[in-house]
Amino acid sequence: MKKIFILISIATLFMACESSENEKDLQRIVFDAGDLKFISTSMNTTQGTSSALYGNQKALTSLQEEKSLPLKGSILKLVTWKYHDNPQYIGGTITGELLSIETLESDKNGNINYQLKDDSKTKYNSVNKDNRIKYIMSYKPVTRP
Amino acid sequence: MTTIKKKSYPIAIIFLISLGIFVGLQFFNEPLKGESVTKPIEAPREVISILENSCFNCHSNQQNLNWYDKIAPISWAVNKDVKRAKEVLNFSEWNYSAGEHQGKMYAILNMMQSGKMPLPEYTILHPSAKITPKDVEVIRKYTLSLSSISSNKKVEKEISKSVETKKSNDTPVSPNGVKYTDDYKNWKVISMSTLFDHSLRVIYGNDIAVKAIENEDFHPWPDGSVVVKSVWKQEKLADGEIRAGEFVNAQFMVKDSKKYTDTEGWGFAKFSGNDLHPTGKTESFARESCIACHHQLAEKTGYLFDVPMKLNTEKLLKTLQK
Image 1 (spheres, rainbow over the protein chains, first blue to last red):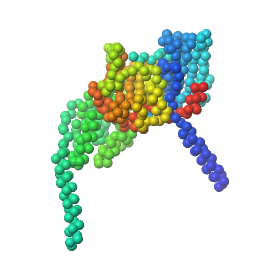
Image 2 (cartoon, each protein chain N blue to C red):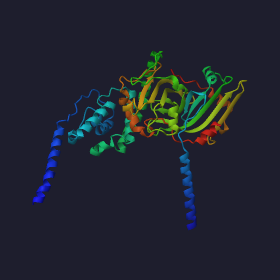
Image 3 (tube, each protein chain N blue to C red):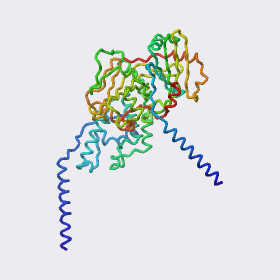
């Protein structure tokens, strides 16, 4: 009995260490879109997610012209985050965990490539590519004077 | 006997000097000027009752101070606090639209919920002004009930404003000297947020600000940090997804510790509508309308709301970016 108790204690201690180690790894990260610029944003209250759409000039033109497929040379990135109630202000929400990055590209010959990267815990794993391309192309660039 | 007499002399002298100083101080005791109630706040009786009990002594023209609050040197501190409190919020001069009233109520709710108001140093001397969890709940229920009332009216107002105006060639400048710049459109997005007013917000940071976030360099933020919050109205699609609709404003925070000494080193600015008209009539507008909430509620993150949450790992970011 005593041995079991000691074993459980040691196991708990290891688990505690692991959890504090994970917490120690947590950071405030900022997504680096490289040369791509912010184009648009959305929020899905059912899934509790918020997304930012980035792209190059060709991608921007594609969306401005409401194309169903990106123009040759376009690169688009849809970055999706989970959002939370703002811990610093009741009445607000703010983005939290990074969930996925979807990339939609059209090469110089117009070949379309769609790629999804996620933490494998999200539901996008069995994603329908055509639907996602259609979805990304549904964004309108935000208006800013 | 002689020894006792010798000892009591200095004590008596100290007492008399102290009494003299204390009486003297009262000649420099200027009582608070009585100001009239021009437009009192309107809210349900139970809400007003809480505000009267816990807030009115500083945040209104209806002070009901204790006798010891009126005696120098305590009165000096009290008068200074009352003056500052009324600059930020005055329940006797409530000249606000429904949308502004809602915003003020959210600020009050946040201050009460976080225990920042009434000031703990005030409730030590005035225990009856303490806020109970039940009081906070009353304020919360009332504040949340305001959402649907004010949002429609606010939308109408914003639409009429944006129709009237167009962006001119002059660079808009806030009364405190913060200049509008389009540069933020090329900066990194640090976070995205929403607020009770049905707005969608994207927050951008310049390179100095992004570095400060990644290193948690918040106390203080390095000079030269600039954070811009772009605000739009929410537009709901048929499937319920929310997109950014009409542009509302761009809110700037520029860190310059030498220039903006009375707002924790941050220069605040808000440029609204398509003409990007700056908010504020005087240089000190942010002292009255911005810093109070930022100071009390966002101290942990260097007076900035909407700093990315500490919930991700560099490893995950690298994996997803591969």
